[in-house]
Structure formats: C-alpha cells, structure tokens
Amino acid sequence: MRKVIISLAPVQAGTSVDAIKLAEDVEKSVQLGAAMCHLHCRKPDGSLTPDISYMVECFEEILKRTDVVVQASTGGVSDMNIQERCNPLDYAKVESASLNGGTTNLGEAVYINSFEDIRYCADAVYKRGILPETEVFDIGMIHNMEIVKREQPFAEPMLFNLVFGHKGGMQPTSEMFTAFRSFVPKDALWGVTHFGRDNWTFLAMAVAMGATVVRVGFEDSAYLAEGESAQYNWQIVEKLVTLIRAMGLEPATPDEAREILKLKKREDRL
Image 1 (spheres, rainbow, N blue to C red):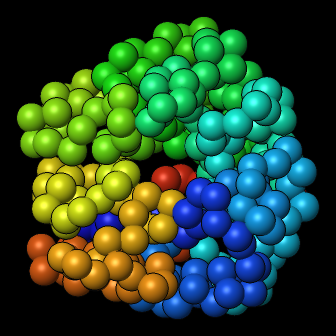
Image 2 (tube, rainbow, N blue to C red; image 1 turned 180 degrees about the horizontal axis):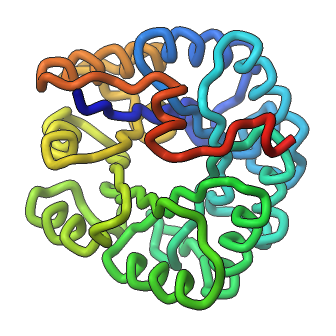
C-alpha cells in the first residue's frame, strides 16, 4: 500500500512559541499520522533569529515524546544572510532541511535566494548528510536546481516541495498544478504546500496524483472546515489522515518516511 508522508509545519509566522505546548501538539500529531516536523529558527516571541538555541530546545522537547523526522528551515523572509540561515544545520539531529530554489515575490516582500545562496545551502546540507527538500515557488526554480545539481554534488533522492498560494507565486489551481508537476524530474520525489489553504480539494488532488509528501500546519493555514479554524495542529493532521485513508492509502510513520526518503540514521551522523 502506498504511504503518504505528512509533514507538519506547526508554527505560524510572527506568533510566540512555547516549547512545551508545541511539543505536546506535535506529539499528538505524530500519534495521529504526521511523520515529519518542520521548524524555523525562532526566538520565543516568534521572530526569526540566527541563534539556534531555542529551535534546539523545541526539537529536544519534541524528541522526548516522539521520534518524528526532524526538518529545519533555512528560509523565511529576514535580513539574515545565507550563512546565518544555514545555522540550523549545525543541530546534529536535523535529518532534512529546506533548500530554497530561487528568488520570488512572497506577499509584499522579495524573498532573495541567489544562485550563490542556493549553491551554499546545497553544499552545506550535502556535507552534513542532510536531505534537502527544495522549496520551489515557480517552474523556473526546478530548472535552477537542475543547474546546481550539474555544478556540484547533490543529495539523492531529489525532493521538491511545490509551493502554492503565496501572493506573487503559483496559485492552487488544477491547471497550474498540472503544469508545475510536469516539470519535476521523473526520478525525483515531490510534495506540496498550500499556503493560505481554505479547502481540502487541492491537497486531495495532489495526493491522487502521487505526492510523496503533503505539508500542513499553522505555518501555512489553520483551516479545518468552512467557517472553522483548528485550535491545534493535530486537528489538521487528523483530518488529512481521514482524507488519505478515504483514498485507500495510509500515512507513513516516521520510520517509514525515513525509508522512503532514504534518510541517514541520526546515529550515523552524530
């Protein structure tokens, strides 16, 4: 039976972060079917920072409770340079990390990811044995990554996160999705993020068309049903699991996710 990896991005940008409450929410989310947890490097007040100490504290609290796949972000609109954005990679328990595929308008902001930035981050994850999840906001970014892969060593398998819904980027329509998906290399894995999500149909389409990873959580949307917002991330995970199982599929466990993504065991990298 095909397994779908549920990636949870549980922290909404700009909101405060309580490590204990976050860990409890992630724990229940994993019990219900999430396999991966995606965190940015934030201060307790929610602002982005190059100091990884609180991100590490949050992950350590989470890992006391569950063996979820640890994914760190190297992104987010800020004034940090790429070296500072890659500081989370120094946390030894990181198994996967975001790798942004190019510059884009992200809402009213310009999200800068030059080729120099891309190469630096790709090299940093490769040297640490961390699997990059390449965040692509338009079709041209897939081409960017093919260029970088030809220029320097790159981790396998290639994993693309097709991001939809941001102002300035690809929008969550079937036409845009079909076009975007058609440019993913045949030997690569791919998943989706629907930012600002206000329905479940787009994610259902992605699962039906073969998505390996589906990302949900408060970072992208708290939508649960028409007129109803989730109070906890686990409620969103629970609903996605119901959808996946209604399609005759199953959510992957953390260990199954590691097998699918060919992740190195933590002890092999510590």
